[in-house]
Each structure stands twice: as structure tokens, then as C-alpha cells.
Amino acid sequence: MKRLLLIILLGLSSAPAYAEWMAVGGNDQIGMTTYADPGTIRRKGDLVKMWQLNDFNTIQTVEGYSFLSTKKQRESN
Image (cartoon, rainbow, N blue to C red; front, top):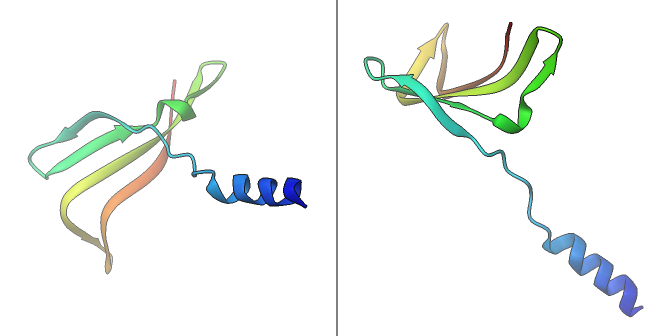
């Protein structure tokens, strides 16, 4: 019984893992900062993939959708 209680407590107390986003650039004219998650960089031959986050200072509206940030997977060679 004590072992089961210990396992449950350990499971409930574990914190979620968060990405280590690093600022890599931006655009001061439109008020945007760009971040990259180095933990997601994957290389396959000449192709490199990683996740990018664009964080805006003001609300952006495109085709009726409003947002403050965008997240996308980038590919480059």
C-alpha cells in the first residue's frame, strides 16, 4: 500500500517539460520577436528541421483570425 501511494505521489508531483525557446531575431518595425527551440533541431541529409515561434507585441488579424503568436516547423537546407 505504501509503495502504491509513493508511486501515485511521484506521478502527480512531476512537472511538465517545457521547451527551451531561445530568441534568435525579430522585426522591430512590426513588433515581433522570433524564437527557436534548439531541442527540436533534426538533420536528415542536407535538410534541417526545427520549430520556430513568432511572438507579436500587438494583436495580428489575418482573414478574420486574431492572434499574438505563431508556431511553425521550419525546414531548410
